Length: 403
Image (cartoon, rainbow, N blue to C red; front, side, top):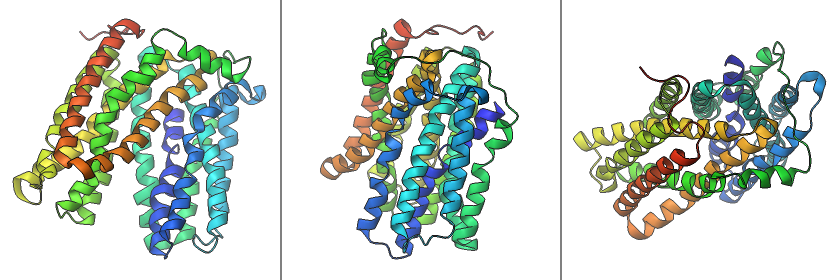
């Protein structure tokens, strides 16, 4: 658990640094919007990480352990990439910075899928809830470290020192990896396309990936994409938004994920999907005060603050459950591929929601989008509950049942 937690802690540091902290630094240093667009364009290197799954599953250096070998290599390369940024000027050397960014995102993608493959190999069904909770909690902290944490360091100690600290944190899993001995397990064989096609041909998998997960998450993500703009329109200060969304929301997400991890040892995946889905739909309705412009001060502001923090926590709990289901559905020989493809759906849904939510709100207004998001979340909850009843290997209970 310590090894997996440390790997998950650094999993999104590079992503959050490049797409959150670096964008702010570049803009403050006078970079144009066109230059910032190049940063977002380079993000496709991260979005396509699921394509690395078959490579990680099939090829390895047996001497170091299958997934452990990949993690040792990618850990060293991620640290090296951050150190390569030290002598560069983020604006004056932007092409080189973007080149290092693309390399690091590809390497981090391989690190991501190798970590997920190792988690499937190491964790029993009863432990996967805890593992998924630790994953979501660590990723939440990872985003805080890579974005607001790095920005604070940059503001006080400068570019070189901030990147040095980031590189040191990224190297943390090496402490555990060097002492870890991976147990033997099956390896993938045959062409990569075979692993991908055989996954979606399994009963219920296509419906899970293409219908259940998108329905379950799209409404929540579409509403979450509107929250920053709604808070700005309600005349909240930048620092207030940062504290509520970034700090308090991130900490609430981490705590909720850890709690969900323990809960999933005692309740079925089906019950968890149903409960967290209904909670998310209910919390979306509490965003209506800010959506209608009544959350500047007083009671409306208090309701909005609690709704935003609790919605972030509920979404972390729901994601922990989805990740646990994805682990349960992954096959030992192609664990990295199976998990990477399933989790890629989550990333695509979030990208679609982030793009479509504000655009639709511009045409219809905030309240209709919030109500539509709640309705869509309820529909997704019903779909997830019905799917789990018929297709999930732990639809009713795990080996450990609540007393």
